[in-house]
Length: 259
Ligand code: IPD
Ligand code: CA
Ligand code: CA
Image 1 (cartoon, rainbow, N blue to C red):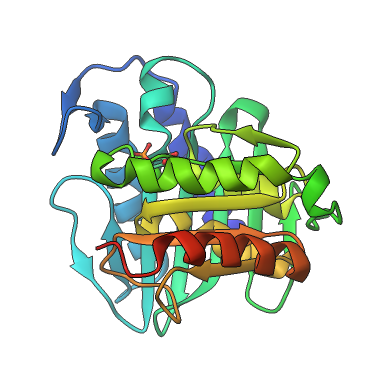
Image 2 (tube, rainbow, N blue to C red; image 1 turned 135 degrees about the vertical axis):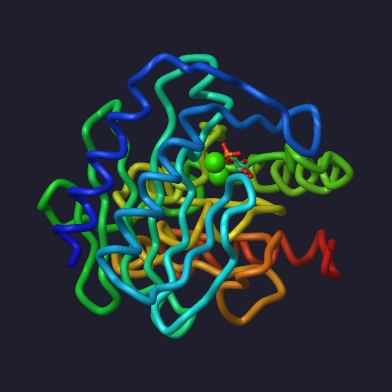
């Protein structure tokens, strides 16, 4: 099944290489959708549901069906759309397959470096056929990836407060503009800490499984399991020690559910 999914995702990525025919805003000023986002999602909708007849589908774009079943696909056709529009080379396709609403298979494809990340629950995490593991760097030597609630800036000041506290104690900060890639990098041992206050299931479902299968820790803030009707916050870290320290900082600042 994973091989078939990765083949479909790789084929879908060819649709990202065409010229962008159309860019439109959705919701608020910073949130864009392009013709490529729609083309990739439509392709995945058709191919993945044919692979698993009767499966449900949750996708980011358009009026995509929000339909769960025993097996449900959770898709971000392009994570990092803003990067994509600006040709920054930092965008991925994220595909999760849930079984009974829990992540079962996760695939994140980064076409610019031809890196295919994938994991199956209980079977480990891999990139291009090789096992991946979180790093063992301690907090002081960690890199934090984060974001400032781009699509709802009312939460930005809380993000900046938390980021500043973590930044004081860790090594450095990165904001790549694609949550799925940042979380995949955490699984692969390239960064160590992750915090985002407002994210959706399609951003995190696949990569959260990668992190767990690569030996790391993930929590959906104020939730016991992956919420399917987002938004929600996410924290993740490479080691238990780093995770608990990040968690204490984040909950210390947030105190209550932000939305
Ligand atoms: C966004 C990116 C970004 C994150 C946002 C996401 P999009 O996804 O992952 O890094 O900060 O929360 O919504 O809109 O590019 O698919
Ligand atoms: Ca996204
Ligand atoms: Ca997207």
